[in-house]
Length: 171
Image 1: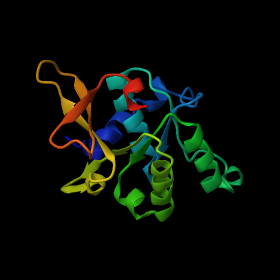
Image 2: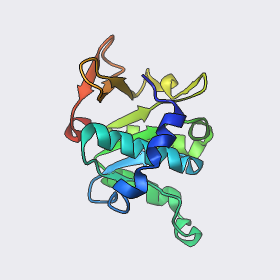
Image 3: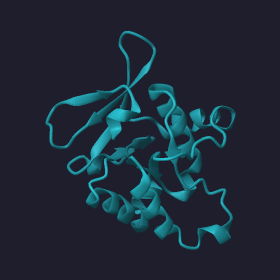
C-alpha cells in the first residue's frame, strides 16, 4: 500500500510533540526530499517511528538559515556518506528536481542501501517508476492487528517482499 500524502501530512501534526530536535544523531538514515515537502517528511518520520520504534534521521528541515545553505549539494553528499542508509521521499516535486535525482544516483553509486518511499496524491502515484532499479518501501496494514507493517520490494527478487521489523534490516 502506498500512503496518501494527506495521511502522511496528518501524521506530521505529531512531529513537534514526539520528535522535536532529537532526530540528528550519528549514522542516521538520510532523507532525500524536496524542500517544499517538509511536512510530508515530518509525517514519514512519524509513520516510520511508529512502525520501527526509535529511528534516527538526518534531513534538511528547511528551518536552517539561508546563509547556512550555500553549499547544500556538497553538504548533502557528506551527509549521505556518513549515513547508514538513504531514503528518497518520492513526490511530484522531488521527481522534478534533478539535484535530488543526482543525490539518489550518488547514493546508489556508493552502494549505500537506498530506498524509495512512494507516495500517492489523489490518483497519482509517485516513485514506483524506480521499482526496476531501487528498493521500494511499502506500508501494509496487519491482518491480525491494527498495526502497520513496513515491507521492502527488492528489484532483484521477483514477487516477494521482505518484512522490516527493525532499522538494522535497512542497513
